[in-house]
Length: 224
Length: 224
DNA sequence: GCCCCGAATATTGTATACAATATTTTTAAT
DNA sequence: ATTAAAAATATTGTATACAATATTCGGGGC
Image (cartoon, rainbow over all chains, first blue to last red; front, side, top):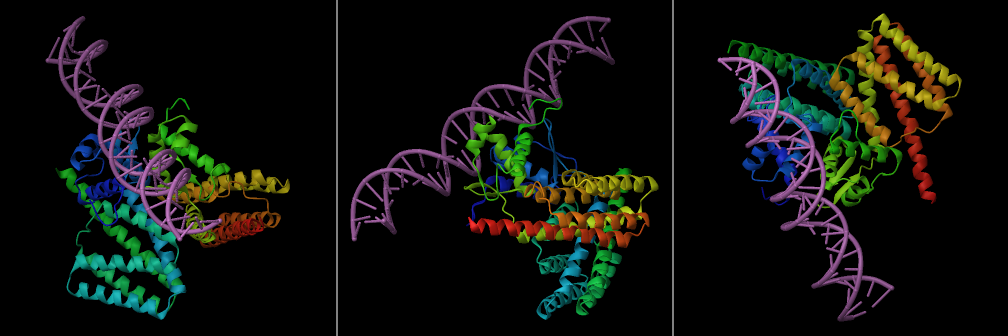
């Protein structure tokens, strides 16, 4: 864990727990045992407890007094609610970014979009998602509103943690690139309202796709 | 601190620190000394450190590794950014609430509004603010989106902590009740878009009023 | 008086010990 | 065999001790 910038153990532990949730080593509803984690990470319980306090405010875990910490267990409804908020916030980002977009900034978006198109053409879903993420965060940055960025990034982290890799859905892939094409045109035209509506729709469509995966998951569990 | 439901010390300490920020015992930029706080609250440093971790994720304080915890120091820009996000989110609440509002729910809003009018007539600013708060949180509840509520409540807490009592500004008082009247009519007509726009404007006007207080504060400090 | 350096002190970060609470196991009664 | 109660054990919450880092203080040089 030694790097040029030495991070506090409690921060490292928080990152480690996040990663365990992300890769599925910890699943929804799992209990986090301080003693076991202390032994497996090779640190005392103190930084672990501090990390858990942080993660509980972030919403990734829930601490029940005297009983311990549990990985949060979002219901479908929570996912929908998160996306509902995200669609509004990212729609706002698209509008604000459009209102103040320079030619250089548009060129950067167009460049990112071209990468999306390339990955789409090659059916390279994984890299598409990566550039998609860069695209969205770049639009966020263009707003210049740090509070807005922090809130969106916080919600996005929660959503991603419960589905680290979005399974490949061919139909959603096709829709996504179409939505991005329309969005790029709204940016090109510097039409804020259109950009906002298209971005909102893009997010809500993404929500429906993700929710359908969860519904399939829950059906599969029922069969076990 | 003994109540029917015994809260953990770290939760109590976090509440205590929030209150100290709220009443001005801790001011922007102040350093929080663990040892001193430990002695004044009569608890060990452990729950204090855990409380500080929570408060740092909430954004109320900032922890600098190896140097300690400091009360966050929002600049005017931060306040503006918070209100910008709040206006979008509360505007969304107004729209969503309008889209699904029952007659009973409207009657409750009208009742709260009548109280606002009463306090306005009596120039009772303090109670006006209290009912104003109830009005806004009721609109939030009507959305049925818990995530949205949590985010708004978190931002609101941060805003309120840095100005626990909004100083009486006669002009803003007059504007506020006018904005509320218009908002009530939009709710009555069940016009979601109008409700959204009016709520957004209401919040941005509140932002301008609050910012002007801060600017006056900073000017006064300059004279000292 | 100012600056620099080293020592002393204070504070923060982590480990360990103890106390409080919950859970599991064992024992006793029916 | 089942159930309830008691005992043992495990885990969480807090206090205390120790280690690491930062800050302050004192002394010397210019």
